[in-house]
Image (cartoon, rainbow, N blue to C red; front, side, top):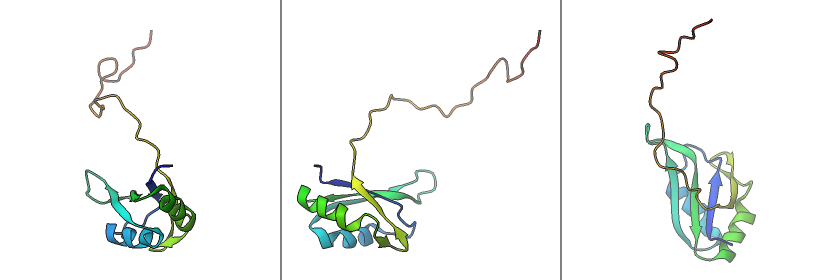
Length: 105
């Protein structure tokens, strides 16, 4: 089992320190990351907590999944490895058929 945990359904008011304090009851927290939106620099409502051992991570999942933090019921489970995605990304404007107009025959 991995030591890294996914924590979802976080309040936008939750801080990394509050998240670390909540998980510290189950062992040593080695890392806490809140995911932020790149455009607005606001929290996205989920993050990751890394515990020092797999046993502590399992205790944290059992103890924190469904528990309340800042008025929200947390979703806590073992983090899956990040999927490899192809480079690039789109986002540009695409023209269809000369500007989007379809010709009928």
